[in-house]
Image (tube, rainbow, N blue to C red; front, side, top):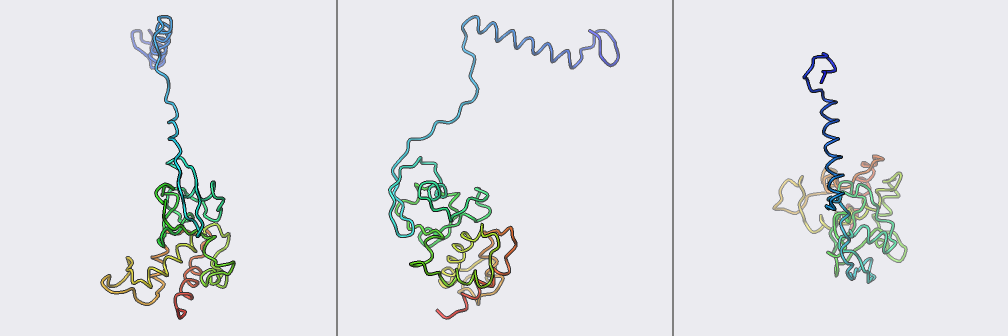
Length: 220
């Protein structure tokens, strides 16, 4: 056999090796098929798990659903209950657009399975207003122009709602000077840290901080 680059006899070229390997593989499959041998099949899709009944309490209403156990809370809210306010952004728990409240605590609904929240009190952005009246936080977002495209706003509002409750309860954050004491006055650093899990691609962060601070500083 001649080398393609040197023309010397006896040298095995890469092209020749690949051609020989392909010929051997084709011959083996042909022989196996003729002999009735089973050729291993390629990878197949994982079968779906059986659906299970799930009862969710969302915005004060009980819903009986039948869901595949791997359905996320985000998909259950949007696709099964039609609550489209909760947004699907990164679907990896990084952007915060899917933030909802579960028993008063904020969670990324894209990272949580619906079956895990049976019996929990779930609140989405649709459940923040009371009888159609905006909360002070929602009104502050409008007053301070704390959103532009609005895609991240539902998650921002849910997260900020939990933030207010956390600080009023005395929960510390990563920037609290002394975790043994209640959180200090509403500094911009405190608000930014506590809202850091919610991203805004429009860059409305200064206005979001101003909106949260304006509500926090009002008398209860």
